[in-house]
Image 1 (cartoon, one colour):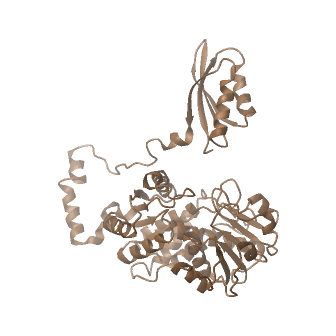
Image 2 (spheres, one colour; image 1 turned 30 degrees about the horizontal axis):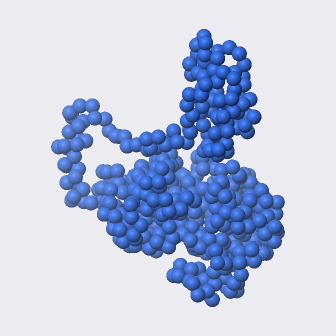
Image 3 (tube, one colour; image 1 turned 60 degrees about the vertical axis):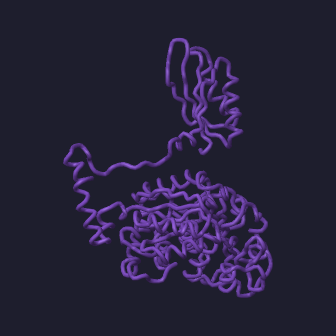
Amino acid sequence: MSYSITVRLEVPAGGKAVSQLTHAVESAGGVVTALDVTTAGHETLRIDVTCAARDTDHAQAIVDKLDAVEGVVIHKVSDRTFLMHLGGKIEMRSKVPLRNRDELSMAYTPGVARVSMAIARNPEDARRLTIKRNTVAVVTDGSAVLGLGNIGPAAALPVMEGKAALFKRFADIDAWPICLDTQDVDEIVRTVQVIAPGFGGINLEDISAPRCFEVERRLRELLDIPVFHDDQHGTAICVLAALTNALRVVGKELGEVRIALAGAGAAGTAVLRLLLAAGARNVVVCDYLGAVHGGRDDLDDSLRWIAEHTNAEGYAGDLRGAIKGADVFVGVSAPGILTGDDIATMADGAVVFALANPEPEVSPDDAREHAAVVATGRSDYPNQINNVLAFPGVFRGLLDAQASVVSQEMLLAAARALASVVTDEELGPNYIIPSVFHADVSTAVAAAVRESAGGRARTGMTEA
């Protein structure tokens, strides 16, 4: 549907042109999803034909087929995805009426001065009397946007707007995109630090590794509000929740399985840390050079930590060797690096999470021929692992608890809560993780985080 188009055209009121429109789209391999007559006359009809295409070239081929129908005149072709983004996807609205002078004097001057002075006397009242209690900054430098790479802050803005819309839709949180025109760690940290008083939490987004680790660490030290890097911790929560249920399906325990993890960047490192915290013991991590082990001479601080906490046997081969006999494969890396034949070398009852998006590490169809459970990041296959399952509920819980930090205990609690949304009756190879539209997802995660934060959030306990 991301390549859905609407073609506004005119056809003769009589004859066969109208009936030929659907046939023309289908003959081009498209799918008609709506056909609306917008203007009717004795001589002509104006019709909007909405149809789904595979990509932009296919969309143009559909338009050409429609244009070839006798009597058809094409007036306009609209890409529905671009139309949805026209003028942006979010807006600010007032929550209070401003109908007369009395209401204006309370919402603004002079009445607002009383509220400002109350906060000056007791800064903690900002959480009670301002938007701070329900507002998150979605901060990016545009250096690692989706699967698109370093495309800059302006090009990142539509993604950050979408993130803000998801916050509102799934947790009723007011979020705002902050796209920074710098990729300097010091500048990012300082900028976020000075705007932080207006927010109840910071969601770091699409900042490339390894800079993202330092940005998050330093901001957590500086700020008294929670800082959460969704590419790391949101991914980790969802992976742990899905793996918890996948292992229930195949009858294995996390502490006993052998896991091969592809990807040692922000997401892979966070997934690893949370899996280890949850009880995983036997993990081999691979990056583009192969297995991470203590004998490599290219280890930075992050890779050195991985080498010290994984791969106890010192395996030094490639990913294909690492997955032989493995019970679990988790990929947060690159498309097409494995084949179905590689998955066939895994242990019986294998679990495969191929999460590179939009193209997974291995074809889901090929993986399903050999693995017992397969999950991807895509919406057109079962078991979609999507961060929207985690971050709205996590921040809802953090804001409700007026938390100042994000602890590893909170992340584990969020993962357990997300996994528990899938009941024993529902659990199966094609349903290990709930839909993002499941009514209980955000509330369950929020409740778990809120409970976990209750005795810890204001004490500066250990961070994730």
